[in-house]
Amino acid sequence: MNAPLLEEGGLMIRLRDRIIDFFYRKATLRKKHQGFITFLGGLFFSGGVLFIIFLAFVSDKLLGLQEWPHSPANFILSVPLLVPGI
Image 1 (spheres, rainbow, N blue to C red):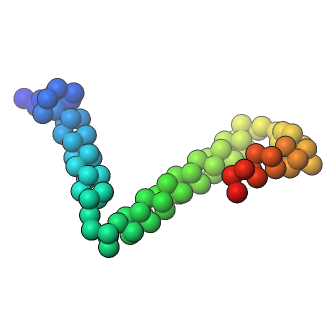
Image 2 (spheres, one colour):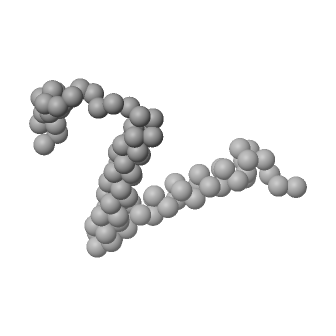
Image 3 (cartoon, rainbow, N blue to C red):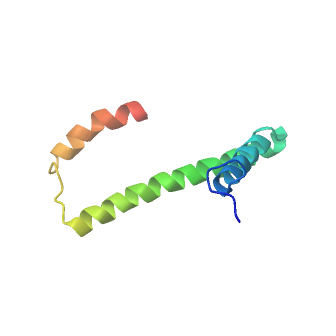
């Protein structure tokens, strides 16, 4: 029979080991390849963040949530939060 999922030699343990091995091999590559891997990682992360923001807008529309606070108060409240990030 198949090994249980979380015991030694199980599917999840092997998957975890493969993921850890993948990151180790990518982190120890020659410098020539690290820049490309870093670019792909940044692209993947940025895409994930944009996807979550898009889902937030879609879910707001589907749930019929109103804009809060209304303009121009939303701009005035958002500027102090955005400026430190720039």
